[in-house]
Amino acid sequence: MELEFSLIILLAGVALAAGFFDAIAGGGGLVTLPALLLAGIDPVSALATNKFQAASASVSATATFARKGMIEWRRGLPMAAVAMLGGAGGALSANYIPATVFQAVVPVLLVAVAAYFAFSPKLDEQARRARLSAAAFCLTLVPMIGFYDGLFGPGVGSFYMLAFVLLLGQGVMRAVCNSKLLNAACNLGALLVFGLLGNILWPLALAMGAAAFIGAQLGARCAVHFGPTLIKPMLITVCCLMAGKLLMTPGNPWQQWITTCADAVKGALA
Image 1 (tube, helix red, strand yellow):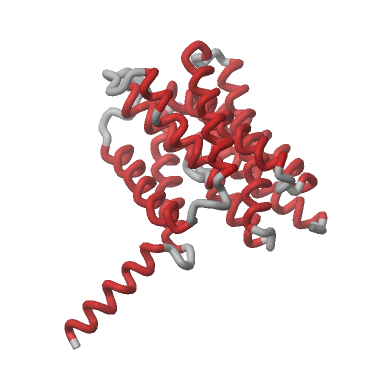
Image 2 (image 1 turned 30 degrees about the horizontal axis):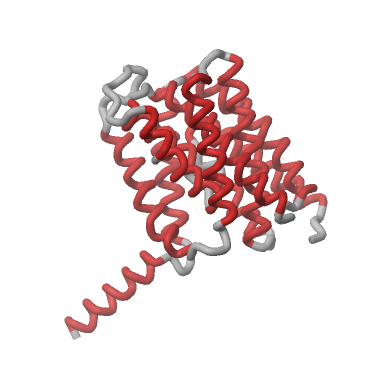
């Protein structure tokens, strides 16, 4: 597919902003994937190319947190390996699972994430009692979220962070850092599969990847500096925007359900 240079530059700018946003609160795919589709790129190539820039952003953010000694490598590496396998499995399954399943479920999950952080009075660095062992967490939530990342993607960073906070009892900044490691791992697993299948538009992917890397470096530094003060409102905003975007997508099952209910009510009142 031939791409104009001006289009590549424009999408690289989108990736820069998305990388900054993603490093802080997750959800960069909310910006980049629709932009790729609006540019006329077919869905599979858009998903694969978006995964390259997403991997660049998540690896960049992980490297920044690692340099500051904020990554728990001993516990995190086994989880990262499982997340990578989940991401690869999701990418392999991308053409087989109906998109309507995710269109219906993901907005509900995103609203739940936003509601939890909006109304939780304890979003801080204080550690809490873990509700799940690290081994159980690694074998259940980690591959499930990784699979979703390979199959679709937006919101993965938010999902991992919420899981760390709710189930492992971590403070929000610690959860952000650890979630970036897993996010990078499942991105790389999915990217490997998409690359082997030849779905990636490499000139565009390299430009967007470089821009996302820079944006994530800036975003990670802001996250370290401002901590939960910045993360909480951005996370809530990202989740609500993602949920709204998905619900407004033409053909979303929730739209069809609302239309059916409205028609039923009109029929009953007529």
